[in-house]
Image (tube, rainbow over all chains, first blue to last red; front, side, top):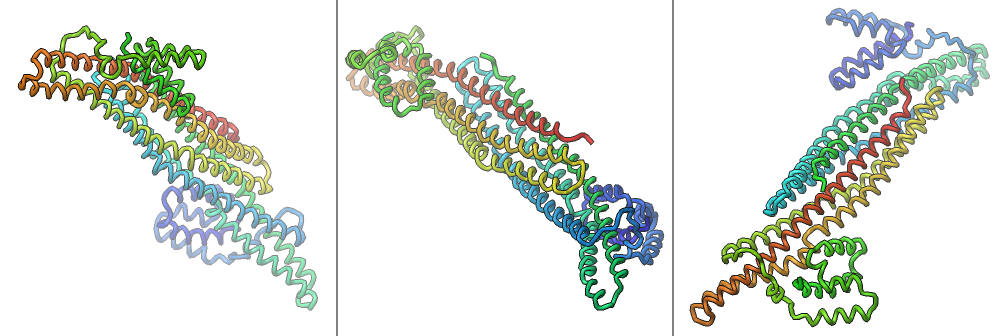
Amino acid sequence: TKLYITLGVCLAGRFEEEFIKMRMERLQAWMTRMCRHPVIAESEVFQQFLNFRDEKEWKTGKRKAEKDELVGVMIFSTMEPEAPDLDLIEIEQKCEAVGKFTRAMDDGVKELLTVGQEHWKRCTGPLPKEYQKIGKALQSLATVFSSSGYQGETDLNDAITEAGKTYEEIASLVAEQVITVQFQFKISVYLFSLKPILTLLIPFHFYISQGAIEKVKESDKLVATSKITPQDKQNMVKRVGTMSYALQAEMNHFHSNRIYDYNSVIRLYLEQQVQFYETIAEKLRQALGRFPVM
Amino acid sequence: TKLYITLGVCLAGRFEEEFIKMRMERLQAWMTRMCRHPVIAESEVFQQFLNFRDEKEWKTGKRKAEKDELVGVMIFSTMEPEAPDLDLIEIEQKCEAVGKFTRAMDDGVKELLTVGQEHWKRCTGPLPKEYQKIGKALQSLATVFSSSGYQGETDLNDAITEAGKTYEEIASLVAEQVITVQFQFKISVYLFSLKPILTLLIPFHFYISQGAIEKVKESDKLVATSKITPQDKQNMVKRVGTMSYALQAEMNHFHSNRIYDYNSVIRLYLEQQVQFYETIAEKLRQALGRFPVM
């Protein structure tokens, strides 16, 4: 469980920078994410970060963490996967699959954000303006009708005026609701995308594993020239296997979070959309109810 | 009741031209409007137009109608308004009020059609494309997620795929519904605007009355130079008063139709809008229902 202490140090240093740059809600959600991580959440450094009371206590903890020698690849030496050893081909395939998935997911999320952005831009800009214009045009028409001097059209003109006002309300509703939804959705998708977890943890495993795989591949030459023994090579493969298991564990944790998070964010988005369209329908139904039945 | 026979002739002639130019639904609605007119509906020519069985019958009727001498201002000579005589100032005010109202209504209706047009243009063009893109982006994301190799996310991915398809359905729904609504609304507003009735009947009264008023104004000079007697002038005022009553009767008929028609068309529009937004809300609610509760 000392495993991620090193990472904890990186994270703690990073927190100091991010504290200023990150917006509160991003930080909050990111923090939740970190707390959900089974290893990070229990690491000494993370606990110390969450609980320190003054500058002095913080510096002491930081200095202690900096003395930790289990940095970089060394953390893998603390791991003992309770699973069969893997051969190099299996390891390579697993690493490649992770790389492929992360790239595809990055593209998929970017695409969704791009089309969403385009849609929301229109929804906050021209669309409310149009609803407003329709509202104004209806109200003008009611004013013209009122000037006819003809008796018995007060009900109709009042109803048209109210329908006009309803369209103006819908204009504000569209603008406001879209801004809220857009904000929440962007934040969520950003947070649940690869950025916060993957840029910190996954690449750490991923690139180390990839580098290690390359080294193991070169080791055949070293065995051939008797620079290392076949047993040394076997140990190298075993270590890379451990890295691969660690990467897989990290990915599994990521996937389970991803499933939960995307389910939540899309549910929330759809709920808001349903409510949004129902509110519009209800407002229009009320406007409709004001028209006299003839 | 012979009053509008002349107009009937004009109309009959016009029908022949309009028959080709006018679209079926416009003609239908225009016909309904004519049938609703208390005088036109009962006029001989109109009845003959509705009932003629062959070319020969039609030509006979037309020729008979063409012999009618009550054309132009002459139709007013058949009217006996059962109301007090009006003085010139009252007559002028009434005519001006009609002119003012028709111009204002024309502007109001044009404004509504313009903003509607702008809105519908956007709704049929970019908006469905955006919904389609959102639908596609969601489906792509589900495909990416499915490639994770992680167990137990089939429900989520199926739900995201369905949500994507729902957005594609909404895209078609927006495009189709908007086209229907736009068409109906435009046709209705066109029909219930000044065009069909006013360009045929109201201006007929309106311009004749205005011309007549000018003549009566000039008649003071004629009386001064003894070219007509004061009694002649009095008769002229009386005739213009009759025209003014006829104009008012036409306007009253127009107003009562307008109130009924605008009430119907706006009710219909709002009903369709309510149904439209409720359908979207329902579709999204179904999409939402497919997401697993975690």
